[in-house]
Image (cartoon, rainbow, N blue to C red; front, top):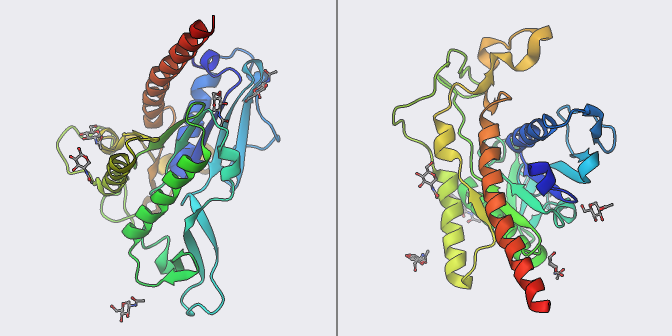
Length: 301
Ligand SMILES: *[C@@H]1O[C@H](CO)[C@@H](O)[C@H](O)[C@H]1NC(C)=O
Ligand SMILES: *[C@@H]1O[C@H](CO)[C@@H](O)[C@H](O)[C@H]1NC(C)=O
Ligand SMILES: *[C@@H]1O[C@H](CO)[C@@H](O)[C@H](O)[C@H]1NC(C)=O
Ligand SMILES: *[C@@H]1O[C@H](CO)[C@@H](O)[C@H](O)[C@H]1NC(C)=O
Ligand SMILES: *[C@@H]1O[C@H](CO)[C@@H](O)[C@H](O)[C@H]1NC(C)=O
C-alpha cells in the first residue's frame, strides 16, 4: 500500500548514519513486498556499503525512488577562511545549507536528521570550528552552533521547498546506549537483551533546541513548515536494539569488546518503528492533501 501511495514520488533521507540506518530499514520494508527482487535497484549500480555521497534506489514498477544523502551536519563543512588562527583546520558554515540540497528540494517526502556529529569530539576537538558569514566564531558552543544550523535548515525550507508538494519531517535524536564509557573508551551494550522499562532519564537536549526553535518560528510567522518525527523517548528505552558486538557480521566474527556499536541499530529492528510512524504521518497529511485536490477539482467542475 505504501509503494502504491509512493507511485511517481521521491522519498529522501538526509542526515548522518542513523538516517542511513532508517533509510535502509524503509528499503527493506518496501522491498519485502516485491516478489521480483530485480525490480528494485540502485540507479548507478552502487553497492550498499558505508561511503560518502548518496544512494538512490528505484522501485521499477512504481517509478518511485528511496534515496539517502549523507550530510551529518546538514550545513557546509569546508576550508577555513584565509588568515584564521592555526587551530582552525576546517569550518562548519552554519549559515550555508549543504550543497547537495538542490537534490533534496523536489522530494515528495523528505526526512531530515542531524545530531550525532554535533559534539565536541566531532567538531572542535578535530579543529572544526564554526563560521557565520566570513567570521570564525572562536567561542561559539556546540549547542549554539547546532541551533544556528537548524535555523539555516528552516530558512532553506521556507525559501525553497514547495510545501504543497513536499512533506518535510525532522526525525528527532536517537539516543545511544554505551555503558561504562563512550564509543571510543570501552562503552558497551552487548549484554543488553531487554528494553529498559524503568524511568531512566532521557537526554532531550537536541529535541528541546529544535522544538523551541519551531515554537519560536511559528509564533513569529503563524505557520510551521516542519513536523518532528519524535522518536527520542521511545527509542531511549531500546538499549537492546543495537548492533553491538555483531556489527562486523558472521564472517569476521564479533567486534572487539571495547569497540562495539551502541549507536546504530540492528535491522529488522527499531528504525522500522520510526518508519511505521513516518508512514502514519505521511498518510494523514497525504489524505488531507488529496482531499484538498478533490475539492479543488469539484470547484472547477
Ligand atoms: C516518474 O516520477 C517522476 C517524479 O519522481 C515524474 O517526474 C515522472 O513523470 C514519472 N514518470 C512516469 C513515466 O510517470
Ligand atoms: C573568547 O573567550 C576568551 C576567554 O573567555 C576571551 O578572552 C576572548 O576575548 C573571547 N573571544 C571572542 C572573539 O569573543
Ligand atoms: C507547488 O506544488 C503544487 C502541487 O504539486 C503545484 O500545483 C504548484 O504549482 C507548485 N508551486 C510552485 C511554485 O512550484
Ligand atoms: C509561543 O506562543 C505560545 C502560545 O501563544 C506561548 O505559550 C509561548 O510562550 C510562545 N513561545 C515563545 C518562545 O514565544
Ligand atoms: C516526544 O514524545 C514523548 C513520548 O514518546 C513525549 O513525552 C514528549 O513530550 C514528546 N516531545 C515533543 C517535543 O513532542
